[in-house]
Image 1 (cartoon, rainbow, N blue to C red):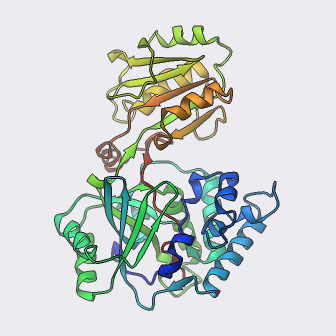
Image 2 (cartoon, rainbow, N blue to C red; image 1 turned 45 degrees about the horizontal axis):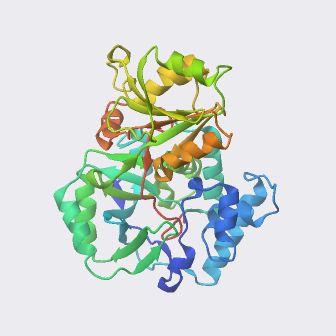
Image 3 (cartoon, rainbow, N blue to C red; image 1 turned 120 degrees about the vertical axis):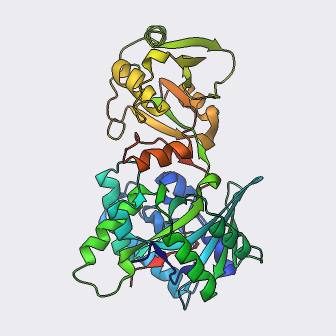
Length: 408
């Protein structure tokens, strides 16, 4: 079974691409999605977050949501807003955010390679989020949210993708955030074969963003193995970028309370393991081992003492140090996946969001972190290690709706 293969994508006709393209389902709350999709009936948010079309207060994981998602999906197809390609293709996906660009390959990747560890993961998943994606895939009989994966940069692949993207794109859309999404279709059989062979020669692919979608695809494939003769469920939708083009931003933390301490007492406890320096400006860490703390209207720059930096490659990550030296022992937050006293803020929102959360009273303190590197991520995955939850925030994000994979 090949590592990747072409597929007949379901795509918006060019004149509808701008209307359809939507942020990923997991970066907007239901309220934000409802506001974003208001007056835009062809937005893919009506498929990816169909609770926005149900009465306020509806269970976002209730059966009615998945039925509504299928109804909305079928309407877009029935009205020929979304049209499936006649033949299997690869697609080139271009992302432009200001002066920053990424060029990747849209394909379907082998579930067997994911199950065996050749498509490597670095995060644990939450069962409830997996269940949601399984139910969404089963309801639509499709994978609609691509998984972002990275491949170790390979000159032949890189050159083929750049060459294929020199002509005008077949699809183009710009998000509300100013990010331009472009899609080129690769129909040439020889080019498709070269790309497939080049990917098959790679030692591994690395999941960057989309662990729950990957795990859900594996579960759907397992449930269908005995009952379906077609092979489409053996693959899942991915966009693969060279590792040096993927950009990880900081993934920051906010906490609801100080575990009974005053702000002054909390800062003094932090001083036991960190050098703490007041700052008159918002702190955006500039190196590993450095953190920003905002509490009670004041910013502090923290640097962890060398005695508290472990040798273990996972424990020495900044996200681990913050958890192991502050969140767990001082605040009693020991499970980032389950404790509702901690929340996470992607770096795209900036340190201003950390200040806003505290000043508004919705959080007691916030922490800014230095971004995890792509090299760290790949090293963790190669070693079979699991990084702490919410270690990486990738930006720019892929759009939902520009290409989907139908499970025949």
